[in-house]
Image (tube, rainbow, N blue to C red):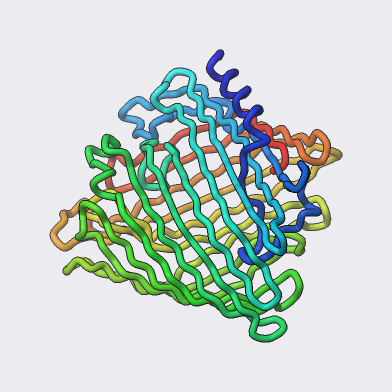
Length: 407
């Protein structure tokens, strides 16, 4: 317990210098009236959360036949978003840290860091942004890989936007992102460093039209190149056209709604590509001042660690409803489901052909609000995965306490 107490103290001490993004338009100046703190010229929006403080009945996500291990776990997450004016421009820094602790299985403990920095110049007719980010984490990289494998991501990005008429903007954006797993990270006897280390380069043309002061219509046409360090047979080119709506945090509906079409073209001969619908939907809204709803849909191409199935199309849906019962008490129900449809090299074997994995999660909780910014909750969640490969089947239960400030 002493190690956990040290982690909590470190998180609280790091709160004033940690950071994470609030919902903001990419090229929009910050709304400093929504920031919680000000230190001289710096506006700060801090938050902290204690999540998963409870029991995980299947720490390693293994099948029942392998006797799943149970452990007490907790994660402390301090974060903040900092803005500082520089003339007519803004400097932005964001930092998020996850202090992950397991009582018995020390190998699963980690300190995960996510840094972002940018310079935003929202001028009269021209706006531009340059920035970068750095991630160091041992969190699971997605639904497919159940190992907490350490990896880093480094990215440099920029965007330029020009106002053509009063409400219409055209622009360009680009990003160069690097993914690197550690040399000794393995999953299912596969070296993730050799299979998934890669560089992604994206360039796009953009169009944005302000339908209202709080709602924008957007169109993006992007070209992506993925190049792998040690397994060039995975290399690909991709073109995507996407359109949707973005909502300001002050709008009745908050978030974004985007649908697209991707033409994903692997460079390896014999591996079929993907041409189809993609989506990125993340919406929240409040009904009658007492019911908060959230809904999300994602669909896109993801790379697999398995050389026989180099990539899969992931379709996921999430939904939650939080209902205020009386006074400061609320209850929440939530569900999530994901479908992983794999693309297979010809002759890879019967276990790999037309492989389809499905992941499901459902749960709920009861919360109590201490003032406007603090919520204490008790949560229970059931997680399940079904796969044609027996070692990927699992189910597990997580239950415990969560405390959040500013989230």
